[in-house]
Amino acid sequence: MRRALRGVAVLGAVGAGGCTMGPALETQLTVLRVVATTAEPPEAGPGEVVALRHYIHDAPGDGLDVLTWTCTALGPPGSPCAEGEVGVLPTVRRDAPAVLDEVLFVPPALAAFVPEGKALPLTNAWILACSPGECPIIDEAEAAQGDAAATAALWETLSDPFTFMAGLPLETASLAYRPLLVSTRAPAERVQNPTLDCAVGDGAAAAAKDTGGTGADTGGTGTDTGGTGADTGGTGTDTGGTGTDTGGTGADTGGTGADTGGTGADTGGTGDDGDPGDDGDPGDDGDPGDAPWSARVDGTRTVTCAIDGTFAADNGIWGYATLGGFSQATWRVAPGTGPTEARITYAAPTGKNAEPGEGDVYVVFVDGRGGSAVDTARVQVRP
Image (tube, rainbow, N blue to C red; front, top):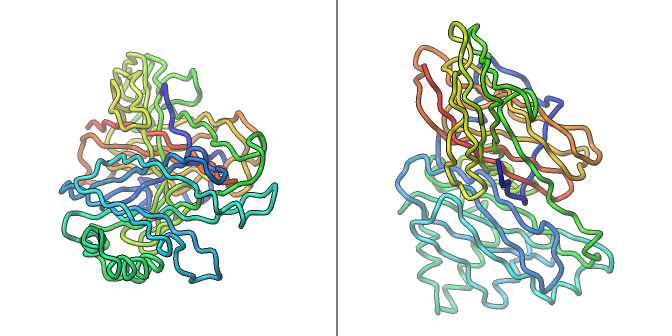
């Protein structure tokens, strides 16, 4: 893809988790979910601005009501959000887009809480996404505008989101958060987001290859760019690489974008796709691009992700799809400094009830240091 959003992260060359014959259950997006949240930059100083991007999958298709807020707890665990003490209000968005951008300002006063030359995850950026009418707290947040008593009560609830999430429907409500690094380090010493660019094939110049059936595709140099993310449902895990998803149906990771150039032709059996390819990365803004990835029902595609940056040992790549999924939940790459490549496997729907169609793919890379990246794509599954 031509552009890959920087701000979330996931990576993979060495598999972590069991492989399956079809898509792993946790990689299939079947309910409303906050797939991922990215931050640019991932480490910012007091008085600076951070751009967040949230990726949301609206499985019901009824539209999205979204509540976002930050919580800076400067006391012991369980302390109230400092934002409530100074009258900051959360943000309500009705009929929100599936790719939602917002800008945060790091308060200068936080400099007093970060030792010189250090970076601390003082603030969590939270997002609650719901189908319309499913989350009463969004209505309460909207009604609290200008009401001091209602605002105080609202912040008491928002300081403990796990509690209110327990009463919400798992299929139509998703809660996630991403820690934000507040830093007093020099800009050159701060964590930077990695880059992520995924394409169908065994390498950057490899021809597109499908493992379903016996045929092999001889044409094109098809490339594609994935996306990723991770959700664990229930208590879920994170939206931006380092964050965690607390409820609904899972968590975050998301992103999409794809390129499969070439006009490859299928030479055999039910093998690979004679997929017309695409150059068309959907980019980080969810633009559907010129053409999707291509796969066959019951088949798989190797996806090669080019990653650059600095990676800690607990880095990870997560893949998610609205049609099919990925062969396992996560992958990892060796810690160190890039560039490097990771190969992951997209798995089309399998079984007697599997049907062709089109869907979205998200690949998320988290570098284990606070940085992350998301790549997204459309996928087209054929008979």
